[in-house]
Structures are given as structure tokens and as C-alpha cells.
Image 1: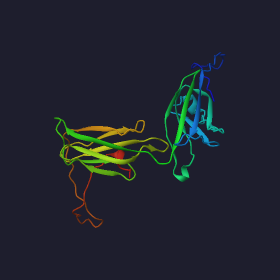
Image 2: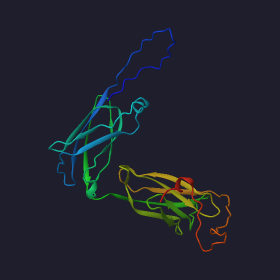
Image 3: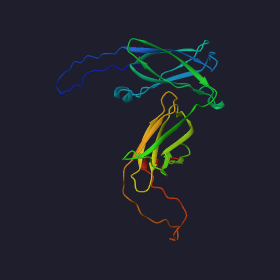
Image 4: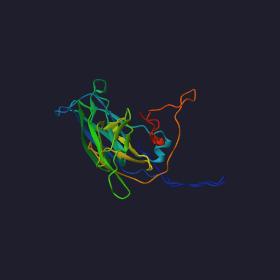
Length: 242
């Protein structure tokens, strides 16, 4: 559905106002759905969603278009407003098959061509990095958390290095985004958002600044102190993960 946009107008009770509605040029996506060997997949639903729909489309409950692949695996989406789209298919989800996701930019009046491949395994990536202090020296023994399911934990080595492996490259049908948080007594915690781009394993560098000290006591329901238990001050964005 193409949305016509008019200028904003102010209408008084006794006035008549004339406006001109303009329909922007739309584009199209021509694609093909194939398996890992390049064989076409026929009769499957394929959908696209726009990354950043304009407010007019959101207010009109603009639905994501969908199509069904033909005998040669091809599909077409017409009359798409200009913007970035993500292609999605649920083919083989119950048997563990996943789509190789990719973004497609559609220009008004033009055709974008794409091939969508279905893989037999969920692609995974690694996130590795280093932790340094404000003088550039590596921080040893810092705790690093990542908001995967479940939440994963690592400790930096003598070079300030850490790594997480076998992380899903996609979450909820889109390229995965992770929050990496590092903590160590005497330093303020630091978090960085890491987005997986094109299935590549990213490298991150986190610098810790001197921070405030939090002191407290861990007790049971009777108020008796509990010893030998690790306690972490977890940033709010990670509190509900894992």
C-alpha cells in the first residue's frame, strides 16, 4: 500500500482548504528462494518488512507485504515505498531450517534483485574483545557478561582479552544485537551494544573508568548473613536477560 502525503494544514471552522496529495514513486523487489545447493523452493510464503516505516504508514496499520514463490522459486513485491527492507520466510522452521537474512534497499522507480538462501543450520558467530583502563593498560580479572539466552559470563585474562562463541547470528528473524557489559571492583561498569553485520564475528574494545564503590550485605529470609556467594551489580539493561 502506497501512502499519499499532503502538507500539514490548519483548518478554521468557516474556511475551505485545498490540498494536493502526492504519491511518491515506489519500487519493487524481484527475488528467488533457494536451498543451500541452489535448488528453487516453490510454494512458500515470503514476507518483507520495512526497517523504518514513516509515521503515516504506522498510523494506518500498514501491513508487511507477502508473496508465494512460484515453481522456479521466484517471488515479486510491487509498489514498495523507498526504504530498507528485510526478507523473511518461515520455510522449514519446524525442522530447524533458517533463512539467510539480508537487507535490501529499494529505490523509488527501481527494481532490487535478491536471492534468499535457506540453510540447514542456524549460523553462529563469536564476539571477542579486550578490556583496558583509562591509561590503555589491559584489565585482568574483569567480569564480562553478554545478554544471550542464557546470559553468558567470561573473565578477562592477563592481556585483558575475553571471548564468547557459538552465539546465534540472528534473533527473532533479524540480525542479532547483543549487549556486552564489563565490571570490576574499583571501576564503573561499561556496556556496549554489538550488532551482528552480515554474519561476521565482531571484535570489541571496552575501556573502564574508575568508579564508585557499592557496599552491602547478603542475607537470607531470616536476616542471617550468607557467605561464599558471588554478587554482581548488573546494569538495568541486563537485569531481565537470561
